Length: 159
Image 1: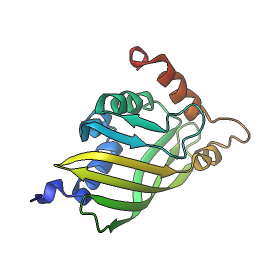
Image 2: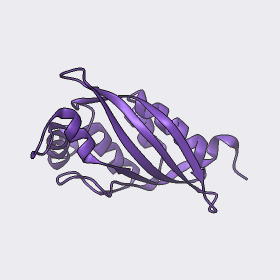
Image 3: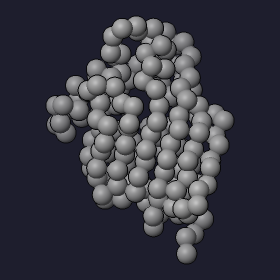
Image 4: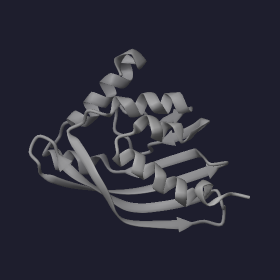
């Protein structure tokens, strides 16, 4: 029987708090050893599928220095499903462009599957175009994507 802290909704809320606090190691620790983080709409150069806690950690630590600073999640709606391990969350991430201070907003839909208090699947649907628009970059891969992709390709020693 799951305890309140191991329910998918509680895990989602804790994961969001860790992410906002920039505790990406703590966020990665929430994943099962063989958990997956999927980014179906990731732009070229950014992985669409990560398997395993350590691969997820490596990716997360590669995105720490970005031109977009996330400051909050707003309008969170969590939808429970017929599968007690799965919830779907809809919300808006808000933040600022570091170089200009200009605000940005990015809609998210996430599917979370949790088992035994750990994240088994985190499927992250977000639009890279929101980041491109916030940065004012048109027709180019944004700095955030180039930076993360370059670090990802260099491997663990680069992060």
